[in-house]
Length: 424
Image (tube, rainbow, N blue to C red; front, side, top):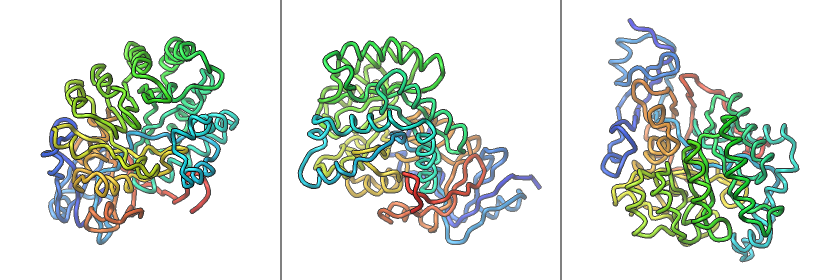
């Protein structure tokens, strides 16, 4: 009999297997469901997936065998701003009284407020806060997340944020994919000198980040009130020359053409897309750029417009799903909640939502060959859900169906805490 490090057994196992890349609409409908299934892991990787009877006949080893459960791949959050200090609850009340996000941002609140608070915070405080966010996300099923900088907006502060991300990544089993978002907003000290700020990013910040190996991706906020399409292209072109993967916030509150530019540059992903136009789709397809939709932001900002996920799937594009967890416009750290909103507000099928939150999300951070589905050779990242029907994780709106988290073949002892550090 062969010896496994861990055998995970459940009433149903959903593998999300199939294809050689991110899944399109027809492929997403096939989720690889195995009744009375099992996943075998050795040295942190999956070595076999099959029925309980077949696996237990051939394999021995430690078992995780919980009744009335299902197993799915670990959730991947490909768009996340998890590192910041301060609080914007006062802005939440302002929005409840009728103020808009862009109005608050233009008045010096929003990102600028969080930048000020984050700059004042000590490095140890930032580490503690980030570790708490990661722990909370893990308890809700996120086993890999992108981690953006962007609340520093100076050479020293952006590097400090990326160094904190690297330190926390090295101290937690959850994987953080670092992204440099230096072009998140214009800092006060560069008021009236936009070109000077862009030069700092392209000539100083990005080379320093590359030299220190602190980021895999570079992102830019291409939006009115932030950076124009031309300015965004300047940043992303410089990043491409340095060998970074490219990401972009585009078409969130208006259409500046950022998605077409991103496709032309071959960006890995193009995110938000509430105001995406039909004519933007060909560039995304030609560039192999994955549209990442974020329903939580539209929901939290009480917007009438959501990204056209149904149109994206129907057009043949693979769609990814993220939380956009951040300090002000989407304080939502749960990918389960993101899947619920994708089904409720974007009319994805549950199968599409799961695919967008696992395999396609993994490809949106260039990790699709390593994580995102339960197939032999991939990393053993999976969730045991407290229901034999995996769809309950989406149906239980605002809840948490996670019973156990397995990362690299190890069952994690996650403690449910709030994303700001205080126990729930």
